[in-house]
Length: 202
Image (spheres, rainbow, N blue to C red):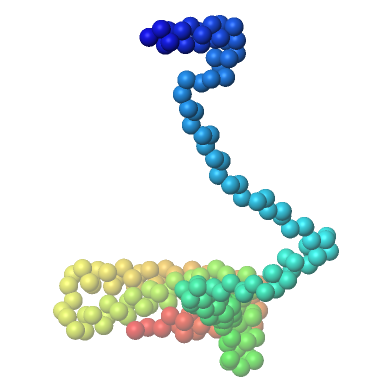
């Protein structure tokens, strides 16, 4: 026991003389080894940029190699359907725009030209109105042949005939002017016949 106590005293005395630095150099427990850092990947140096001339040529080559985009089948069908319709439209317009050609002889062509003169405008209107009344009267007469006429039918026919007489009288007054020439009267007769041709009786 004396030896142990003597040993402890000697250690304590030596520690007191050495100071705190000696205590720091003697850790009380074994420290764990520091963690090993994982290996880092080597740095990759990017390739040098091509010269300006080569850089300008590269996109052009890539664009030439790239295949052209194809339109989907549905779009192709729609375009194909539009093409005939677009081609047919001018033909339809040309048909509508084409004037009606009267293939009758030169004498009729001359009378048609004369009848287009504005001075025959009122006479042509009256001739067309009278021909319409004639057509109504004719239709009523056909109906009366198949069925027994009623009072209403007879009254309607009488009214139409009265209107025909009034229009005819106005035509006579218009044609009685002293300024008409023989050619004008021939043109008036042609106008009446043209109205009968355009709007014939049933």
